[in-house]
Image 1 (cartoon, rainbow, N blue to C red):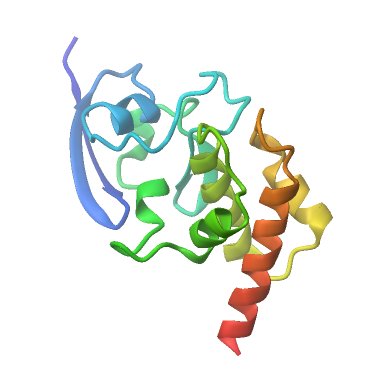
Image 2 (cartoon, one colour; image 1 turned 120 degrees about the vertical axis):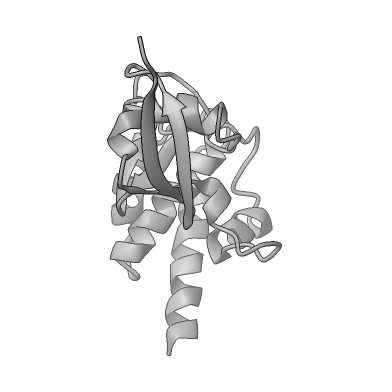
Length: 160
């Protein structure tokens, strides 16, 4: 079977790759594109470790076929920082120790960023609801939720 050609944008950069019709976006990110930040935790869309945004919409890369990225914009965890300058969420996760083993962290950060792009003033309940698709077996979530809420407050203050 012939490989399919896909042209997309990944983290703001034009990107092209060849893939099988059955390849997931996670397969391509971690394989040919060499972006290993997104993790495979379950391969069934249950854990959120592979969360990316597709045209601004939060999706599990393990459930998305790579061919669906043709003409789309994908943002991964690697696209959050500006070179060496961490995104405020990344910095706050470090400051508040809102991570442990690191498997869920990329997906949590991508999901939290997606939330704050839509709602800069979320309640704790809204943060917990938004992150419900991301499973963490280490932290108990409280530090993660507080990191998101603190980042939102700091970003609102900086925007004034």
